[in-house]
Length: 426
Image (cartoon, rainbow, N blue to C red; front, side):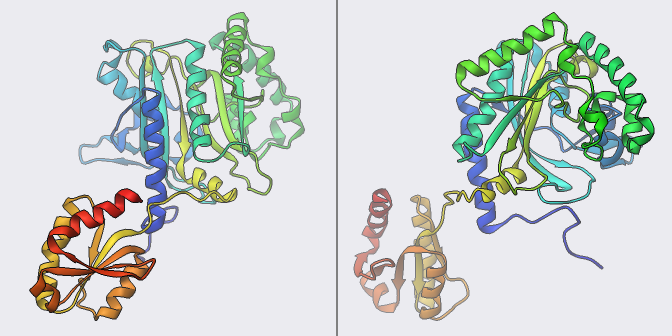
């Protein structure tokens, strides 16, 4: 029997968990500055939400979803991506009627995709995402992109990232482009992979996103969506780029950027780690506009735009450029006890110090004094508080500064203020 984690999943704990906490806190603060509010949706939804929202022709729906039937015979799916569930919540809770528009949301979610695990690609993955629903202003696209760029910069990734953008146009533009793609790729149909042969019938634009045929000559000669944009789509894309220029966000236009989900239209974008030797998983974040998705999920036709940021890939990127996150290391003090009576008194003392806002630990293994001091060192305690029978009689403790080795007597009554003074100085 195998009691290890399932393939494509990992345990996150100790110093690694502190990195995640630091990143999450940073992203929450940034979202708050941009006036986005948190949303938490269920971990599983009715399967149709993803079939209709993400698209039947996508790899996610066709190959990667964890789908099961509940006892009532209903088909449910573990969340493979964030946008469809957020849009479902927007429609179900009638957020389109809220006084404050557009509705600006962010989330931290676990996603589940059955795919081959590799560096930066897990079967249980974690994403930070934002969604803005209720505005078709190109400035909103620029704001969403700028939030993502600002987040990476705040975490130390500045010169190492590259923003790539494209326009997928409106429905009319995509239909004309679709016809051109079908005509072009039909000539090479027998040379394409099995997936692309299916995409040629279902969604030919997604052939451009194929990793297997990426170097095929047909890809280099494929018709560009930018040549099929109608006037309104061209203007929308120009406006998005102009807003990015105004706020100083640099970008590269890539006509082959299509994203892997069917709901995208107009603006599509990715942020990549632009570092040699990083490997295949260079895309850190992807997003775009998805006007029409709300009506597809049973609501009014409300425009939307957003992105999903992979936390695992973010951590990989930080490691790749050797950025050390300022994790909260060490504790304020470790209480060392000598004898049963001192141990009992330490229970009360530790609780009081914790209530005062100090980070405190004590021995729970009845170890000798020397072993307790070693434990204090491992926990990087700034101070140790030593209590024995003599200290109990005098109602004092011996406080040792673990950096300087200096030690002095402090009364029970003064201990809290003594340690708090130290913490304020730090």
